[in-house]
Amino acid sequence: CFCQVTGTLDDCACDVETIDRFNNKEIFPKLQKLLSSDYFRFYKVNLNNPCPFWTDHSQCGLKYCAVKPCTLCISYILYSEAASQDIEECEKAEKLGAVNGSLSDETRQALQEWKKHDDESDRFCMLDDEDSPKSQYVDLLLNPERFTGYKGPEAWRIWNSIYEENCFKPYSVKRPLNPLASNSGLCVEKRAFFRLISGLHASINIHLSARYLLDENWFEMKWGHNVSEFQLRFDKELTEGEGPKRLRNLYFLYLIELRALAKILPYFERPAFHLYTGQHTQDNENKKLLLELLHVAKSFPLHFDETALFAGNNKEAMKLKEDFKLTFKNISRIMDCVECFKCRLWGKLQTQGLGSALKILFSERQIDAMPNTSNTNPSFQLSRQEIVSLFNAFGRISTSVRELENFRSLLSNLKQ
Ligand code: FAD
Image (cartoon, protein in one colour):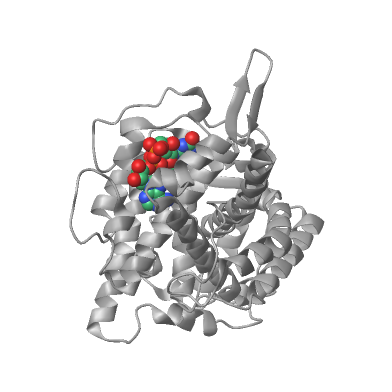
C-alpha cells in the first residue's frame, strides 16, 4: 500500500512501525476518552480576529464551514469562570500580601508589562485574548474536523503563504507549490520546521478524506472514508512521489508532540494542579486519566531528541531559535485569514497546540526548576487554552495515525 510508510524517520532514531503500534494500542484509546471530558471539549477561541495580512478577505458561505454554537457550554462557563476568578483573587491576595501592598500603581503596571513580556517570549504562538468579549467557548465534539468543501484559490493562498513566505524556504516561487522538492540544503532546525507544517497539512487532509461527505439528502448526511480522495492526496504515483514523504512528516510531528507530553509530566503531577470544571469527582478522575496517559507517553522507547535542535548556547543558535519562534508565530496569525470558520477553528487549535508543544520542549530549565509540592507559582506556566489545545492537537495527529491503518485495510479490501 502506498500509505504503508516504513523504516526509520529522518533526523530521528525512531521507526514508523513502532509509532503505529504504540499509538494505536496505547495512546489513541486513552486520549479519546480524555478528550471527550468537559475540560477538554470546550475550547475558548476568538474566531473573529481580522486577517492581519490581506484585506480582500471574503466570508465563506459553505454550510459545512459553519461552527455550531455551544449550548452545553453554559454551565461549564459559569463554573470555570467563577473558578478562575476565585483563583485569580487568591493569587492576587497571595502576591499582594506582604510586598505588593507597598507598590505604587505605576510599578504594579510595569510589573504586569514585564510578566506579559516574559510570558510572550516563551511562546511560539499568538494566543487569543481569553478575556475579550469576542472570544467564545466552542464545543469541539459538536464541531468535528472533517470535509467542509473549502478549497481552490482561497485555501491555496493560505498554504502558499505558509510555505512560500513562512517556512524558511531558501527562495520564493509562486507556482508550482512543491515545497518538499526544494527544501534540501536546509539546516536540521529549518528542515524540522518545514516537516512540522507539512505534517499538520497531511493530518488535515487525512481527516477530510476520512470524514468525507459521502451522501446527503433531506433527512441525513452520510460521512465516511473516501478512499479515492485519500489516494489523490497521498498516492506516490499521483503526487510525483510526494505523498509518502508527507505521511512521514505526519509521523515526525507525532514524535515532537509526544516528546512534549512526556516532558511536561511533572507540571501536571503537582498536587496543586487541577483540571477544574467544578465537578470534583469527575475532575479527579480526569486528572488520573491524564497522568496515566502522560506516563504512557513517557514510556515510549524511541523519543525524539530535541537537544539536537538549537544545539550550543552560541549567538547563532539563539538567533535561529528566535527566527523559528517568530516564523511560527506568524503562521499562527495566518490562521485568522482562513475563510472557512470550521477550518479556522481547527487550524488555530492545532497551531496553538503545536506552539505549546514547542514551548515545553524548549523550556527544560524552567520545568526542572518547578517545585514539586508547593502551591506557589511554578517557574513554568501553561494557560488553560494552551493545555486544551496541546492535548486536542495531539488528539488530531494520533487520530490521523490511526486513520492510516483504516485506509490501509480499506485499500487492501478493494484489491481483493
Ligand atoms: P491542498 O491541500 O490545498 O495543497 C496545496 C498544495 O500544497 C498541493 O498541491 C501540494 O503541492 C502541497 N501540499 C499538499 N499537502 C502537502 C503536505 N502535507 N506537505 C507539503 N505540501 C503539501 N478542508 C476541509 O475539507 N476540512 C478542513 O477541516 C480543512 N481545514 C483546513 C485548515 C487550513 C488551515 C487550511 C489552509 C485548509 C483547510 N482545508 C480544509 C482545505 C484543505 O487543506 C485543502 O486546501 C483543500 O482540500 C484543497 O486541496 P488541494 O488538493 O487543492 O491541495
